[in-house]
Length: 110
Length: 155
Image (cartoon, rainbow over all chains, first blue to last red; front, side, top):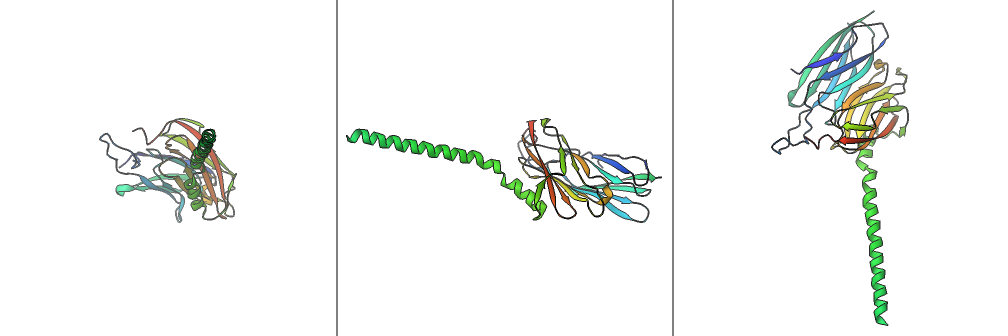
């Protein structure tokens, strides 16, 4: 289980645009680099991130990202979303070697 | 009389050869500047729509000391309404082993078409941010960056 960090306000006004910042610990090995023995290190990437907003009855994908080797190690991605109703934000990362991780953040909308 | 004529002919051939050599060198120099694969990657993302400059701001330091971690921010001028919003934001590079950097998919729920990430750059190069609107039109911003320590090359 990789360490993930999600920075997002706990409470927001209805209709407020909030910034979400995500960071996950991952080497993002490109498959183009040689290791200490000169052999090419096998590719190991996070390829996809998706953020779904569940507000009690609708589960909508509000943001998704496709990542390539040019994304730095420990991928940091930030984006915005509109706070529509109290609910949960679900972040799912997936990648090579069966990598999959899901984190949840609750948001209270007043 | 034959001697000086032959010499002149030899000199002319040498001059012609040298001129051809210079022209060849200039052609070799100008060839990589076109970067056909970068243009092809952008055209594939645009899916046939015209790609115009404007509406997009790619925010990146012009002088990068460490190519392994380069913060970038892309802002697109858009009301982000159902009728007019940004569908996707992509970033392309010129000199990394692969042209794609990332593709982010947005919806009107985003509220603001601003995204940020940290990327790798293998050397000084051009970066192109492309925003695809819901009507299919594409807008770009191109930035040149100088990289002191290239990613991928140094372990």
